[in-house]
Image 1 (cartoon, rainbow, N blue to C red):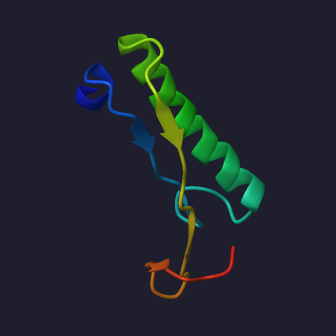
Image 2: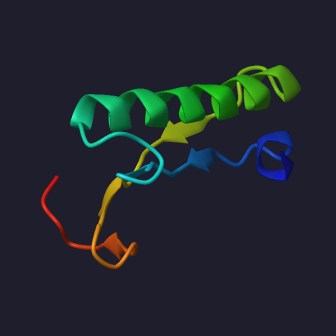
Image 3: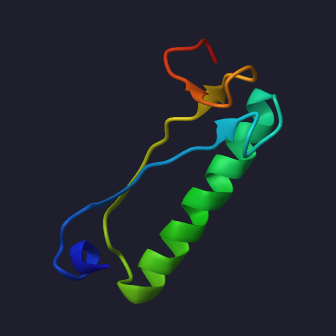
Length: 75
């Protein structure tokens, strides 16, 4: 909110960990990620209409054997 109020572009990053926060499909990860980003975008725009916003994401897979994110895994 501070960034939006001071004219600094807001970067909304995130993404689900596939297998933990979303089912094991790319479509489900995309839907959950876009819902989260649109929620953040709505809150920012309600506070400061016209604020610059950058949307991005880094969805990752979960290693089912260890329960940890499998960084560098294919999507």
